Image 1 (cartoon, rainbow, N blue to C red):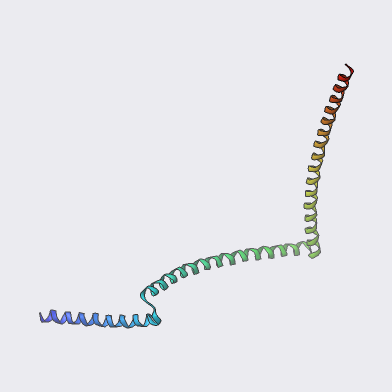
Image 2: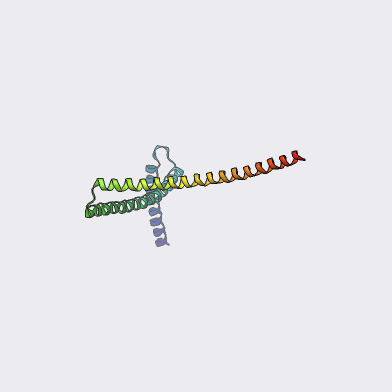
Length: 145
């Protein structure tokens, strides 16, 4: 019994020390009117922030990878320009030619559409003229009777 009593006192003292330690820690944490619910909310916010930081790090990595790809592509274009001996003027001339070809293509398409409209109008006018001519002949025929 004495031994059991001694063991219980030791456990009691251990738990008492833990309780006091936790009490001090809680009072330190709960300064400035903060309660347990505020601390729990802060912990939840911290978890969501960690998740957001991880997501942002992934986005940063992919953006840096994409930037490196574009940089490599640009350097490759410059290398090809240097190898072919094209200078800035030649590149601008090629860009202007490409733009001119695009404009010409658009204008040609527009002109073809307008030609189709004119042809349709001419067919409609021809049909209307024939109809008017038939009606005029029919009226002349009725007037003769």
